[in-house]
Length: 67
Image (cartoon, rainbow, N blue to C red; front, side):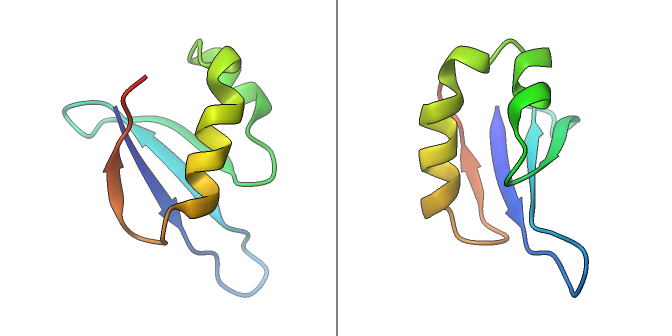
């Protein structure tokens, strides 16, 4: 799974994308509201770990998410 942090413009907030190995979009959520999207993917228990990664992740860089 891969993670990308996307910078919002003007009134559009920052978002995070979670993509699979073929880069198919699995989840797309606001940085400040990850709850439901992560739960739907079965990653609710790893939410704290993922959010720490998101805080340090630069905008526009694709990172491999090993969970």
